Length: 226
Ligand code: DX5
Ligand code: ZN
Image 1: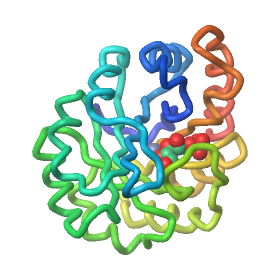
Image 2 (image 1 turned 180 degrees about the vertical axis):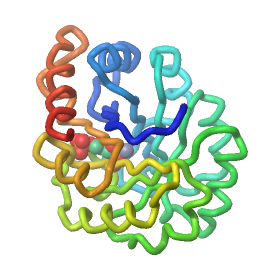
Image 3 (image 1 turned 45 degrees about the vertical axis):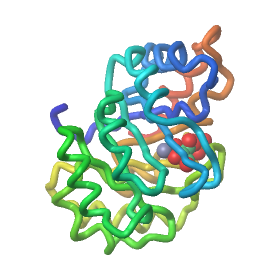
């Protein structure tokens, strides 16, 4: 993947039909998704459980483009190899998930995959400063991780602006995850974001049998963001 800051819409399959992941991934890509965002939750780091590397490996053949795997698990390190083998293009780990995030990011890069650093709403941008050489993406959580359909936390906009200034010319994406809608997309892009994760706002009104609304929703978010 060559680096650019064009706006990318990354639908989260957390809002998809869990019995139809393959078809859902094909549908969102056909309807204009740039990346596919895959939320892995362990019921320990976050109060919800989704799925693990076996499911990621099963859906991989249904994704033509970029598979963006967001690990909301603790500990992380023991599972990195499995998610890399499952076919992730980028693996994000949370700064709050353990005492040695630097080592975790090294381990992700060691698999040959892109490395992402996710930060919770309560984590300050200073914590990221000494990790910037290790990452291809910083994921700013604009809700507390664990569930889709939550309300965007507006105080995170200041953090996005500070992060954008800190990143400067480095080839590092700023991804926003949580509560992205046609209303909030322009705010996060103005603050410096370039990858927009959206679950409910993409999947609302559609289904694998009626995927047209996915395309309408993706186009509306993109139009609002640019
Ligand atoms: C939250 C997840 C998000 C979530 C976004 O823990 O990481 O990706 O699915 O969902 P919406 O867009 O519905 O806020
Ligand atoms: Zn996510």
